[in-house]
Image 1 (cartoon, helix red, strand yellow):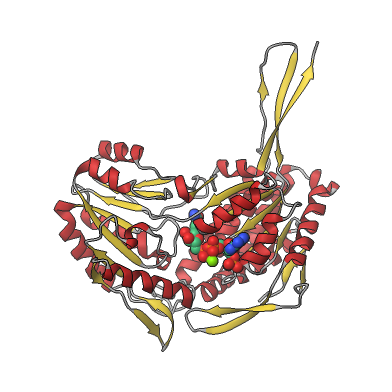
Image 2: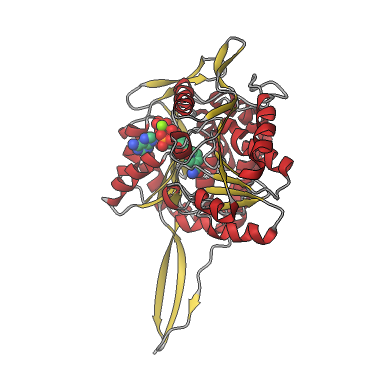
Length: 478
Ligand code: NAP
Ligand code: MG
């Protein structure tokens, strides 16, 4: 296990000498004491990233060579997939199965952007007059990446892989609950042969180390994934220096089931939509909107299947649901469940905390029926295994209810009418719409939010835009 800061391809203690505890939420055991980075450590990491960015070696490195380094990192991470997955599981609480998928997605992300590194091109532009005008796509500079605890390795890779492909250098601040896989990833970067300072990791608190990164004059861009609230704070701070920002924030995504859908497929999709990753998924389909004529059938099937999703030891083969990330996260989800009951929603499955071998922050797969749009559990992101079922009448009713939210990250549509599916997809305000599917991702497919779910896109070719500036060059031919 690596527990020190990764700066300039070396591991160093925090300047203050302080550490913080990392807990396994499935066993409640302290599994590591990790260096608690602060302002001085952010200074050191930004200096390393800046000096690498300005170095001849990095400036003159071809895109092809950067691509080779990323591909090498992908190979190394793939060869250590089991080790990274186990570590991801023990600090996050997710099942080993989910953790393996996550590490595999990071490998894919590295490989995908390895392929982009030598394909970043400008244009030649015809203009009036005797001029030759072309554009170049240049790296923005030093990138500060701040990520949450739900997909620690993967959400980091969605930032550093395109950033490094674009020719930027990176300082990563992982979440305090889950710093271990980010720190260990330093080994992959060093072994792949990246020059010192290209990629750095500073663990530490959000309002201290995280905010120091946001405020740092040596950082050109902040790429953030996390809560809408912290996203707003970051925008405000970044505005003071016109720092570039891209934000991937929360969601309250509608998963719409029309009466003409394949109901069993829709129920399976609703279950993975909310219970995958214990519901700690920004794109979770946390509002299930069901056409009134099939509501009873859908809710009965959902409740029966949710009751079989019993939380268990995340490392044990066959476990379908792990532990929530922390005690405070579970307490917060339990409060939402209490609010749901109090405001009149009808609990049809789960609702209770669970211990596995007498320990851990587990929670039953929970389903509420008879939820109305005014209820707290229909409006606020719960970020846990809690599904709210609301009902609607007709296509117009579905669209209206789907868009009755501040957020706009994702949506699902279940119907056998392809024309209706497209009409609704057209009108739902969300960055990703799945039709007869939910929770699918591919490194080639852009992902990001509308409205309060943020702006900028990750994944796909579009993600590179977040790490590039366009320079227009005019040559007088007269
Ligand atoms: P969070 O509190 O916003 O934290 C996210 C990251 O920001 C952590 O590294 C955190 O550090 C840091 N941070 C906290 N306060 C900060 C500040 N004032 N300045 C700079 N950095 C700061 O979110 P969370 O509680 O970890 O994660 C849950 C939320 O993230 C949910 O709302 C969820 O929807 C959202 N999320 C969105 C996506 C997406 O792709 N759209 C993906 C995952 C999660 P500490 O850990 O040290 O506090
Ligand atoms: Mg937080």
